[in-house]
Image: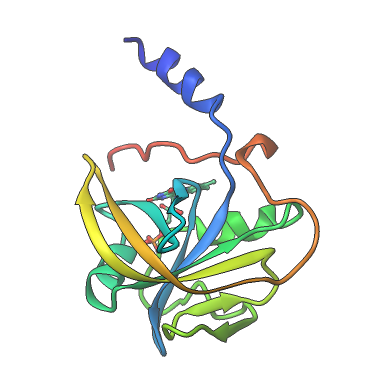
Length: 161
Ligand SMILES: Cc1cc2nc3c(=O)[nH]c(=O)nc-3n(C[C@H](O)[C@H](O)[C@H](O)COP(=O)(O)O)c2cc1C
């Protein structure tokens, strides 16, 4: 299976783009996620796939909550901002308007919709972990279309450093 064919096929797969916030209170972080989906109606549950090497994993393992903030079509810049790797001393959430969700996580007040989740399971999925979250609160915050990978913003495999 040629690498370029794989990448080409993956590019065909349309996905919504969200900012997922992790942690609670002053101890929090956020990252851009497109590998996310609802997986159950009853109870309502979502899954997110997170690279095992991401800083955000520490939060998911300790506070066991996350908020999926589905972005609007015109929030591409925000997706780029949260796709930056975290480094000490500079919180990615510092200059973004948020309010506290039921789990204590952060809701981006300018998002299209949000799903506040408690982690109920974690599965090993190769180089990513799948976190299953039970939705404890959800809401619509805005109007319009969601940002999708069709807009030319995509999750690409990070090159070894
Ligand atoms: C459009 C887009 C989608 C992304 N989707 C995911 C994803 O589903 N899972 C993931 O682990 N990283 C994804 N990323 C990469 C992370 O957002 C990025 O590596 C980020 O720096 C991780 O944040 P952290 O270092 O603060 O944990 C995506 C990036 C972009 C631009």
